[in-house]
Length: 191
Image (cartoon, helix red, strand yellow):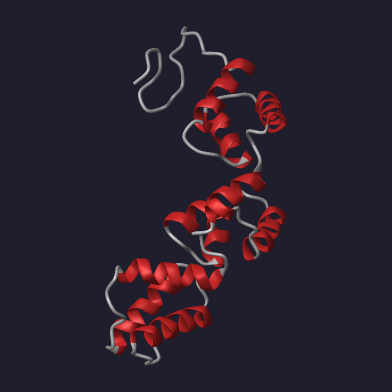
């Protein structure tokens, strides 16, 4: 509980001085600390600055300055998030786009990312990353199976199919990935 505040209300007690809202340098400090852990969207930074009690004019000026410096770029954030998901937890396009929307990425940036993500031009050091939706589904399936063979039991196969669908892959991509893995292992049963 802060000194000079009524318990639970956040309102100052009469006679106490009200703290002024943070100015430009303090707002920049809040934003930079928030950006230190990972890239952020403009929307996320705006919310953080408002939560810090920064005035609207200072929020706008700070965001514009960070954008000019290259620290706020929603398109770069979308590429970063897509790459992180491809590298650590492959997801289908639907789920990735939902995650981008939750992070406040504008619809036009998501649409541009959809085109870019469908046909990525990856540098050689990223050759191990999945190239398309089918590769992402295969990668997610391989990670889920962890070296185990594809089960022959239809119920177990349905559960695996539902897992992949919850990961954002469409039904046709899931069926194709499971069929191809089953054929490689010698069990070509349908899910």
